[in-house]
Length: 325
Image (cartoon, rainbow, N blue to C red; front, side):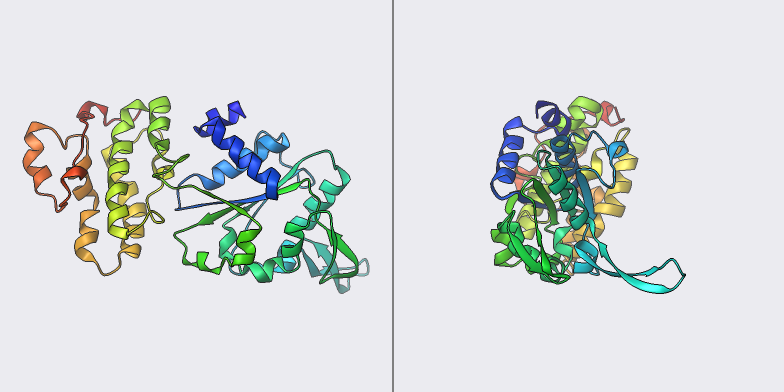
């Protein structure tokens, strides 16, 4: 786990907590705003637990599987269902076709001494009662038999050596579809820009990979502090993944901000034009950019519409650090 902690730039104790939660219920959900590294973390943890190093070692019949839920996803897609097929005589027929969960569960049953992990990305974007069906029982009662829609006689068992890691985007309003029964069967692990393990992630990455971009991490932290007040919470803060890139300068950061960040802010603050204007790139650069504390920028800094004096930048990164590392 030490190597994984170094790779994902978090404390080993946090990884140990997540693994302990998986050992307890065998399923967890990583939840938070977009861009907080939930999917990357889930895949890296799954690969470590199953002994897979990267996508190049992924096999359809291996111990790891990744699926992404969406509004059209169904029980037949995830579990199993009848699908059109052509028989040996060229006639159209329907066959009971296993979905990714059945395939992974079968492999786990055949290899009871090996850990298997499924990552379900965007788990809350599907109609979960429709997709999971009787599996809601099996998530809690592993290794027990129950009848399923297409196995009324043979039944189905979900092996205890199959763990599930889901990711949930809290900026998506469909989070309200997660009911109490679903929540009780999962441990929920927060991934928020202002809380571990995501807090300070961008700064840690830049210090290791691109020291000249530290001003971007400081700017993002300060803007998130303002957004938390403007939005009344932290479920819609800006994730660091938008800026985990080499070679960032003011031009490239502006491009990311205007075409990725501003549309998100406009959506969450719809109709509040005065507040939205505070989070335009030029405004945040004036308040929190690398030159915000320079002597010749005092007039620009004071011209910003931010009322909170504590939001003013506390460190002068220096314009020489603008170029990407």
